[in-house]
Length: 485
Image (cartoon, rainbow, N blue to C red; front, side):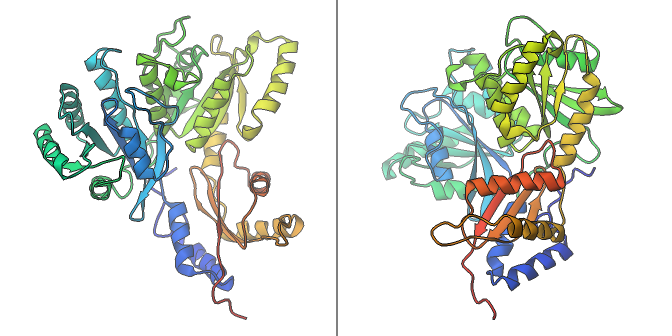
């Protein structure tokens, strides 16, 4: 499989398909310029990643909220407020990118060097460019200078944000930050929006048009598999078992794994790159020190991976942590396999109740392949590779535009959208604008309710497979213009 960027001039559509699609759009009387823009936006490959780093309370989350245009990152007037969700999508001047709010670091949690390294490593792993936020009213601190050294060593483009400059008088404070040696300090007030336009222009210059590589390895490289799961669920034991040797420290004490450990492993006649991640705890902002950084790095590992194997302890009741970890993988758009560990320890009664729990709590991911394994004994380990391959195949499935529209036509004829307010919206046509995961754009005459969208997704799966992959479905409602009689 060619892992090079698959997206050309028309998203994931070939020239012939694109022409056919635009002909359909013209027949329906849509504005062709708008339609072309929607297809291009939906079909773009993985977005460039911008990491926002800095000390606690310098205004990183306020800046993130300003850039994404909504209050989503948690903001409190005290240092070190950390968050569950760290990645958002942003847009400026028609260009989309991901923004990662890394949170501040406490100098007394792990010692300054370890704390700074943890933050900078995350930025290095996940980002194409970095915004360093410094409080202009305080000036450059030793911590700021330590981060600069690490970021410079990483060779990533750095944009310097001199925050909390609320007026002309503060610009002299901002100018003092030239001393950090990372270029021009951009004076900004994240709170009031002052100067953010110039900062964003500089960010777009620093970010690539598209990332250097799509998710996963380059052409012909091994597929990347992230092992996810809550602490002490057996991820390290599983990695050791598939590797056939002790490569990762295993201890009964939960949470001994701190960093993702990349391992090239031969399995099922192929080489895979396995990433063993630190266990994700339910509330990231209640964890401190090493656990907080481990959660950030787990997010980074997921960002790099193509498929997530989520390990669940079958001998225990499904927990909120389990479902949250699965949600993380789905929201990241990765292929998903669910592996139930310690299956050999279950009696018939527990297996019965586990099936009921799965039906009730994992109804949203019924499409994910399931394998029952024992990391300790190696039981059923051979089933892991076919499940991963199935999920990756679903993740990369493409449906030709003609076939998709024939399917949509039959679907709408047999199951029209319910009438609401005297109107009955209908799907006019659609296209699959991208893969990895499959992304569909539907053009409709009116708003489609969430329940009807779920029905469409379910029927898409029944018709075309898509096993082991989330599906992203966006609906564009257009006012028709100049329709010909």
